[in-house]
Length: 262
Image 1: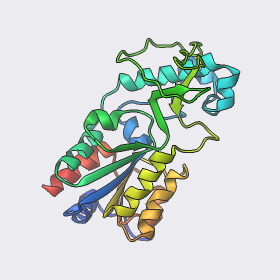
Image 2 (image 1 turned 30 degrees about the vertical axis):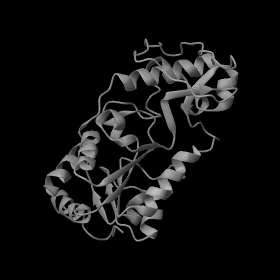
Image 3 (image 1 turned 90 degrees about the vertical axis):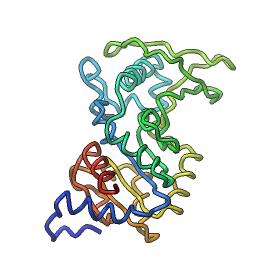
Image 4 (image 1 turned 180 degrees about the horizontal axis):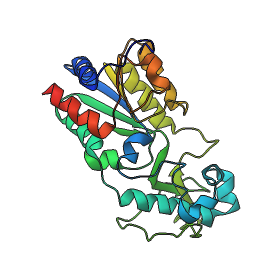
């Protein structure tokens, strides 16, 4: 637990403390949030509504009701978001996590992000709590579909794009993300809680600790006696359960942490 009454340790001291916790750990669980993707230039959920999209509210577009009301508008917005992701590249934070796993420990990434930057960086065990922009499914029958390798053309702000039809039932495809009012994917949530139960150290990266139930995972780890390392430029709701806090961006802290590990 971070003591708010004590001076914040230097980044170097915090890196040494984090490296001491990780050294020799065979199983590491990682919870990543929007902060690590933002370092690759991907707008956060709220920030994504820029330009002509700024006249829309993200909360009004991210619901089943919004899709039923105007599927072409919602599909157009998510295709714009998918285009932004495909134009971006993994940053040093993503790459460092993959390198950490390559050193030998089992690194399970639990992400709140709907992009594929962890996978593109080389991480092999990634569980998406909030779904993925790259895994659409039928709004009617729920059957999974895929996209081709091409980057979609940019839909201008507010442009409506008719969603493709399901090749099974003919219903419209919907983005494969978790909308407001929907449950998290059971498989991903089960994998996340199992990773917490079996890890020796947990790392949280770029997450504010405000979005539940994912925000409860660091507390679950700390409650089981697992040390939690937090990586974020500012204090978060996870300070109460963090053993070590690295006040830095993921792209700075994670490569430096690997250097400390040798």
